Image (tube, rainbow, N blue to C red; front, side):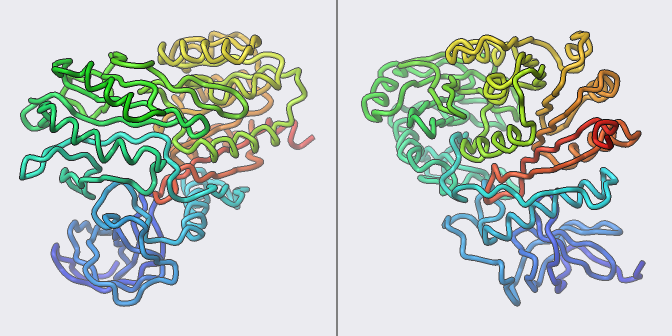
Length: 459
């Protein structure tokens, strides 16, 4: 280790050679790693050290000496300030390469896999204008104007937006105009530091295929005089707006949605078409933000499984049945497990709506319900939250030994950890890893990993 002493605030010159799993550029100086937001591999930069540790540091870009060939002009005029995107300054092809490399590094470093079988990242149809959902904090400017947007990187300073280049462009009028209506109504905006005020967030959703839109105000309490009249005005103004909802979150919390939602005008859900099926999507429903890329990944799963119609499939963390129902049409029996009762109710409704009768949905924590099934499914689909699978889920799978496991993950570090547990004693073999770009302009990557029983793979 070098004896060179780093000081906070010091300026140093770096060559950026890699990206971290959080999207920062990575450089090395005197055998130590420096993480620098807003940089691209290939950049030569001057940075200011802002957080110094013995073996690494975080820094802020001060001067671009020589730009990377992968650096481009961002499509958004506030991309350098807004915390909504990280990678608008990186050309799209390189974003895909960086995401594949991120998956490979996690599987090698955390999972212990040698030359993991990682395919090229499934390319998004468009790297802009894709988000079918956006939730914006609401604030007030120094001059008293109501604002909505994303927070500035590394701060709680709101960047006011009238449009967003990554959300579906059909939502832009609502983003620009609804906050003006909030101002005219003199509704009080929530102030986090005092836990006072009413309106906390503005929630927008759209069915990419149907065009139906849903507008939700997330509020501290129900006290919005004239909300019924204003909601009807919004329905009249926006022909594709099907419903206006209020969601109450009275807690001091970083969580956006509370547990209670009321439909004020219209209907409390929109319709979306996915994989040839119709789904109801409510204000707080989990539904992948990039409809088309999610469909493309489903097609890869269907192709890899090569379903014959006699299989029993268990979909854990199934949500509203987004993956369960398309796969249920191709198997003998499907079972969906989900901890959220509201999501299970929606999944049951979606099954009925699409006349799919060979599926059962069960409410409860996967780690509790899965062992109680007392069965050996042919296929288990894992699609856990970012924290990955509970250890008991992994243990249950190692006992029941389904023929095939498909693990869909939104965080490669926990994916790699769980795959290691499934494969380390030779029970399962990792045969394919398919990353997919659900989140262009960010460092996030969705990944589907396919495992089969090693005894069958060898045979």
